[in-house]
Length: 153
Image (cartoon, rainbow, N blue to C red; front, side, top):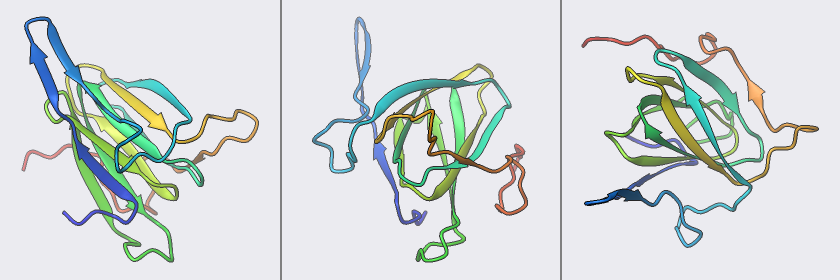
């Protein structure tokens, strides 16, 4: 898959032992590290879609640590060489990935596991409730060519 300009993927290594597991997600010496603002956990119930939103200043680093999600990213930037392209990622307990999403890209996900998905997002800027860097479209907005329905093929 050709990645949208501004999307990066880091395969995460899970290190198991007799006590459990360890998985590093993002380090300040990673090539893709874009700064630190805050880390937060969000959850999504089975079958629920949380989309579409973008940030004008913030870089997201999304990891699903429990359950599974189908993450969509859409490039609506008119001056981008990948304008009009979409990327799809499956991430979670069965696919340990970090997906980095640059400012200006619409993104969202659907929980595709039978249990609640837990998503950790390490963002480059702290949330400012007085001036939120959050711009939204409805999940089924016709402007974005994306189908959130599950298919069997």
